[in-house]
Length: 377
Image 1 (tube, rainbow, N blue to C red):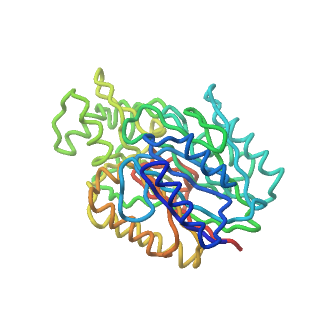
Image 2: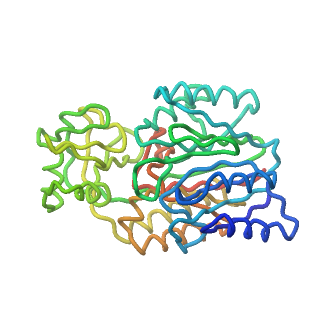
Image 3: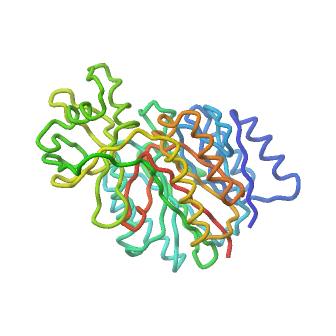
């Protein structure tokens, strides 16, 4: 299998880059298209389809194929993989029946591949992404090999899309399944945010809505810990999400990040990126420093050493919160991850990352970098 990555800030640039990539006889059959909401997605899909290239696509909070980040661009990983080795499905979930929809897609995949692995992307911020993961787990088994993300929309947090050749949906899922007997796919979700302070108890919550921790309003406790002033001006939540997230403790595996993304000012509660069960244990996080980047790169090096020494292509789903928190240092993180394998890469800043926590269960993550390496067997 051969891979190349291209990018552009217009359909014309993408068309030119695609043509240039094929001048040496390269004949891609699959595109992982990570595209700004500002781009003409329909035109890009037609361009790829006319070239005979199948599409797994999601809108982003920024895409990249190297450490040069261009706002509003499209980043596309092209693979010349045999069409017999992969399949793409897309479904809507207007009734919020996430687990049922995902299970149906997994069932269809098993009709084609005995041992599948998956990349998935979902759209709409109301989506309970963990239910999507559990749907695949229900059908394929507890050890299903699956990674993915929730689509972005250039930080507007209004409407996101996933898409394939003839379908684009703002409330649905796109799935790329590989035949694991032919394609090796290995990934790692790495955060790096350090926990600080004592373990605390969530004393009141409903799903992803956290009201109190240690019987105090979660917003007040977070502000006190972070030395932040509370202003009802809509700016506080991004500070909470990016700088002082909760870390949900697990009995096994690494903690899972649960930043507060939307505040209920009536009672100083907030909505997190994923479920925070009442009675669960949490800790606060330190603001990130360079150690966060080092931990991510070390995680990639460990993945290479122990699971996939050689790769032919790389995909990175990195949380939009990392872009906000790390600022210009995010370039060093992306470059460091890419250099571990030094193969063609495409990546995006996502609204959430979907993967198995290190040593733990399938989870929806935030403030996390999810790296996926691919190689034909």
